[in-house]
Image (tube, rainbow, N blue to C red; front, side, top):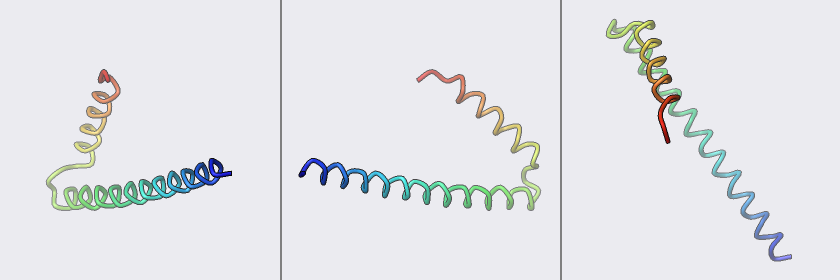
Length: 66
């Protein structure tokens, strides 16, 4: 019985960590969107420049050896 309780507690802790990660991801995405919009609005970067850089970085990360 004790192992079942311990297992259930570990499941709850895992779910809580996933919820925290989801919230962190949302906050990071929101901040990144705000910064991106400001850079575009101020004429510092264009949408195309951001897309091109993101594409290049994505390509680098995909081909990176772990």
